[in-house]
Length: 231
Image 1 (cartoon, rainbow, N blue to C red):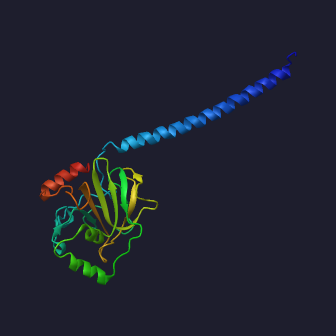
Image 2 (image 1 turned 90 degrees about the horizontal axis):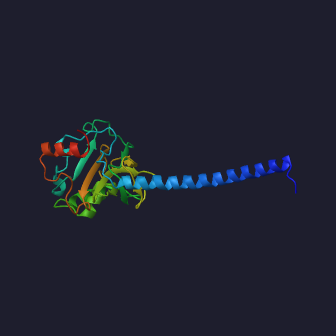
Image 3 (image 1 turned 60 degrees about the horizontal axis):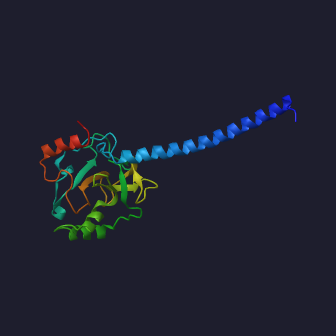
């Protein structure tokens, strides 16, 4: 068979089509590999402490003694285990529906998807029941709607009095530092102004020490500024 110009043209077109096909296949594999690599790097980044953020964007640390960890809570003969962010003591307006973000990367270990507020009668009974101290289960009722995150450093952060969790948030989900996790509310308070209770525990909530436990106010604020990168 003798080759004619048309044959060479057909061969060239066939080779070009083959190159395109291989190119597209290779590009698909490369993109898939790139996606896997990016996700792996992001997962590794989650294991490296970048420092903790405050859970309300733009907020500052509360300075009122009653809004700091260790503040007394006479109605249950205990102390507050975290920071309370509320209007007039957070450097930003704290309003219902305001976004709450993850203070650090971690895994969702609790999210109250079906939270129901107790009736006024049940709430008053709860306050009576905790006059001499509250169990972890009673503390959950007092904190209202909650989200808990477990972090690579072994700590657990608690976000309480929420209006609602962020859509799609589920137990077992991985979140990253600064990801949205919920909205400010006033659940667990039987009314009152919107606020966010933010606790960081060494291990399991209500079973170990909370962050900055036992520190006087001046030293607590000094260490907290360093911990949350506010210096």
